[in-house]
Image (cartoon, rainbow over all chains, first blue to last red):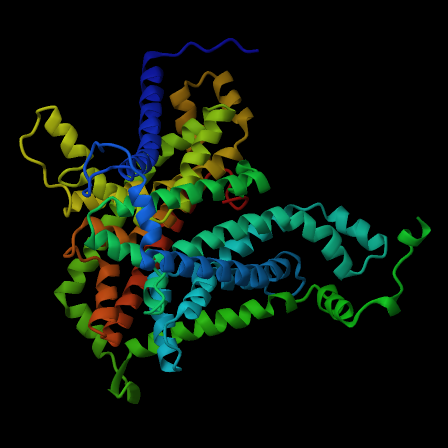
Length: 271
Length: 310
């Protein structure tokens, strides 16, 4: 063990200042959510701080309001469709990007990334216009497909980065044992990829559920997704109802986070 | 045992498996073909249509395009309209300020992550990732609660006797900026953390052994190594805050016009598609220019690791 180095005054002050800003930033990240959850139990019909009393009234009201429940179900459907499409399209694409031995693997990776680099609203507008020209009006399906295209890159990159780090010896061993490419994919590569696919699935689901930038132009007028409904609700109501919806979302977010950390471990999320 | 290790005879394999083998063995482009088709139909062709709408004069009758001729009229109209200039300028200033403040507030968190122990690191990860899983509207709503007339800030200041009347923070430029920074902070922190967790701790030890102070180590070892992370984070924050719709709409009141809210109004309310196309293109091009600039600056300041993981 090295002895602890003596800290000079400027050093202590500088590092102390940096750590203070760090703690402030972390508080800034978490405080708004805590305040919203506190507000959601307020007994009064207007938003004010500090809250008074304690009631589950607003939570009950969320599930009594037909539009909100419909919007949640719509978003759930979009989220699941987006996840399914991204798994079906993204995992094979990741295989081709990581393992392909054809010219243009880099071009393919870039091609997949482009829709994600374009601002969401531009993609939304483009899909809306193109749909209108060929007679496809905005609907829950147009919205799902557009968001899938927007978020596909995340799935491809998550799976691809895992594929690149897999030990090639495992697949060689499978080949030496005379496994066909399909067999080695199914019994060796796929189980090893599962955590990455799950992580990608969580993130694409969340995007499908929460996306506003693409959805606001492509959603069907009868079946509004939750973000669009919420936007209107926040603008035109001032009761803690929105806070209760937020509370529900925060609980779901914590569940999703727990799912990710159980499947691949939090420390790997970033890769 | 003998049965299990024997290779499956080709005859017993189904047609599907044989097709799958044929597709997979070549290591060809085939697995990516469905994605390429979908991306072409849902992204490439729509972008071409968007371009063609922006550069053409249309006659529309009963929802069908009767005639379409090439014209620069919409682009010229947009570029000579002072409203466009102020709107895009406002968006640009707001996005660049947000980006700078996110680096300022985000970097210390990444530094804490670097020097922190296992539980500090976990706490930082949870606090950073959890907000990304809740919707932007929910997070923006929190600021309505905090900054509103009867919100947290005003109640606290009034209870302390510092002010008599609620301050008007909502629906101002400041409310938008505060909301933007807080909402995009996680997007800045995550790439920084990714860089920090690949960090070789021996470098910091070496620096200390050579007599560098902690600030010195931060300035001449840690900071240069984390430049690629700053670049990635800054590009993400810039793109998101330059094209965001929610925060200006909710915290800026109805009349805070930025590029995204302008495009929304043109497309959804006034149905001016050519205008909307031109605005979208301007948004995309200006965004791209800034991203290239960020990439160039990042590349210029990237030391030692250039070409490896930058």
